[in-house]
Structure formats: structure tokens, C-alpha cells
Amino acid sequence: MAVSRSSCGAAGPQDDISVRQISGYPPEGEAEIAKTLIDIDEESLAAAARALHTETKKDTVNAALAARRRDLQRLTSGGLPDLEDEQVMRAASLR
Image 1: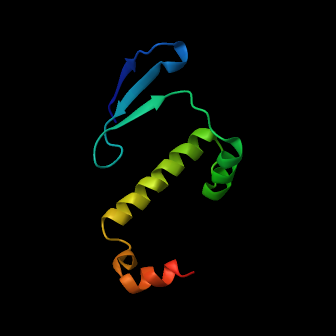
Image 2 (image 1 turned 120 degrees about the horizontal axis):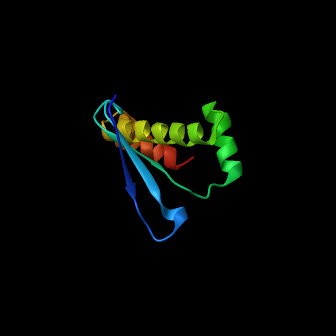
């Protein structure tokens, strides 16, 4: 796995982002990994950690992003054919 590092400078120290490019992950190519400071609602993070069975904040955020990416890929690849079925969608909207 090849790793290269670069840094993106910004206005303040909390805005500095270090970025690593890792070859071979995700499987389709290279991913950039950034270390950054963000505000996250602790209750939502704890709920996500329980649902995703993760122990660290980093693992929880990464697992949630991966799950979202899988969901979007499934939607865009036709993995949920009921979304195109007018009867199913009409029945769902009546609930």
C-alpha cells in the first residue's frame, strides 16, 4: 500500500488539514484521508456507535460514511427496484 502525504494550509491552526493518499483503498482507486477538527453532536455520535458496533469516534464516523456510500451505490445501481414501482411508492406514501 503506497502512502503519500501533503498538507493544505489555511487561515488558522484549527483549519490546517493533513492529507494522505492511500493506493489500493477503496478498491476502485485512491482515497484521501484528512485529519481535521469538526463539531459533532455527542448524542448522535453515541447512537451511531451503538448501531454500528464501533468503539472510537474515528471508527464510528468512518463506518457511517462507508454505510452511506454503500446506500448511495445501491440506490444508483438499481438495487432498490421498488422505488421505481408507482404502486409501491403510492402505498408507502399513504402510511
